[in-house]
Structure formats: structure tokens, C-alpha cells
Length: 274
Image 1 (cartoon, helix red, strand yellow):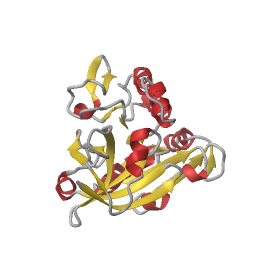
Image 2: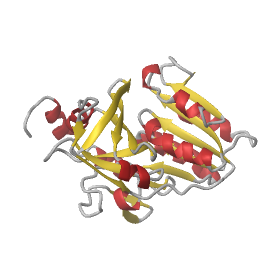
Image 3: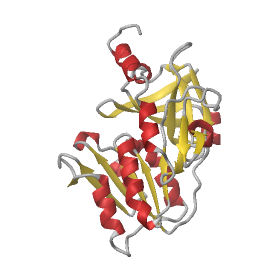
């Protein structure tokens, strides 16, 4: 059992949860994830490790409560417990000093981006972070990212916070100036956003890393649920990723896979049996 120490609402349906998990906290590296079960027989939910405190033996997870399984997880109050937290899983992010990098986060993807941006800054990179959301309440972690980013740029689709528009508008502006053009880009968020970022950087061949979130069950590559096409090769996000070269990702097949169980999930939300 894994005790929940904190459970804070950051934005509508988005929770920051701190768990006691000393072994995982000691072993995790940026980019890795865990698979969580609320109780015996419950759905297995993959969640990126947002942060870890090895000395305190804690993990920080950011959980978007959009389905039945994630809603059950965020319903656990401080002092309660989760049945299973398995990990760390997946390949850690390759961190090096590129000199100048841009990290792009969309919606809840900003939470997944946080540990990566923090590690890039610790490696000596000058990090410019661009974060966006549909409206101001959905823009998260701006202050936390500002602690180690040289600059944080904010966009919202409705203009309620920061610049009105999309994160790609800010990235385009950075790329147009040789003094700010990044030598590497890291993008995490909705599939359309990651695809747009990858297409923007493709002509100039700026290395672009994206983090993929296909359907995932066992976390060992055995079920095949998280299969993604990278170039002409089938890979598994749970063991080969979750991060891949954005210029090689087949985003259309990824989008199709993510909607595979949409009807089933809708039935669960209203309490119906499939």
C-alpha cells in the first residue's frame, strides 16, 4: 500500500498527489513513469513521475481525472492509500547540455514536462518554457517552471492569460531569431499540439522530442496496447519510450489508438456496464 500524503487540485479535474514511495523515489529518473491501481482489480493507470524527493521518500504525480479510473485515484484523500504503484518504468530522458532549449507544454502535458525541464536546466541548458491551455484556469505550474527557466511564455486560446493563440505561435517567434532559436525542442501535450510542433521544427531539423501516451496496460511491452509507429518501425511506448523523435512519429495512428475505447469510457462515466 502507498500512502497519499497530499492531494491538491491545481486546475479543473487536475490533481497534484504526493505519495510515500521511497524505493521508487530513489530509483526514478526524468521521463519515467509509474502504473497505479487504486484497489485490487482496478484499472491500471500509467502516470508520469512529476517529481521525487529521495530524502523524504516521496513521489509527486499529476493526475487528470477524466475517466473512471483516474477519478477513483484522485478521490483518495491524504491519509488514504493506493493499492499499487509499480515503477519506475520506461526509458529515462537523455539529458545533455545543448546550450539553448525550448520546452513546450500543452494543458496537462505541462505537468509531464515539468521534471524534464527541471533536469535540462540542471544540466546547464538555458531553458525557455512555453505553456498553454484553452483558458487561464487550465494553465498550470507557471511559477514552478519559472524557478529554473530563463523565460516562461504563456498562451491561451481565449486570451484570458498571456498571449492569445497557440504555443506554436511563441515557438515560431523564438525560431525566427538566431539569438533565441533553440538547439533542441521538447514538446508534451495533446497529440495535435505535438504534431504541430514537430512539423514546425522539421524544415530546420531542430531535434524535437515528444512524450507519447497511447493505451497502456502492463508496462512491460507484452500486451501491445501502447504500440506506436516510429518511422517504419513498431515500437512500444512503455519499454522503448515514452519519449521519441517527434519527426519520426506517426501521429495519425497514435490519435486513432487513443480514441479506441472512447465509447467504453463514456459508459463508465455514467455508471453503465459495457
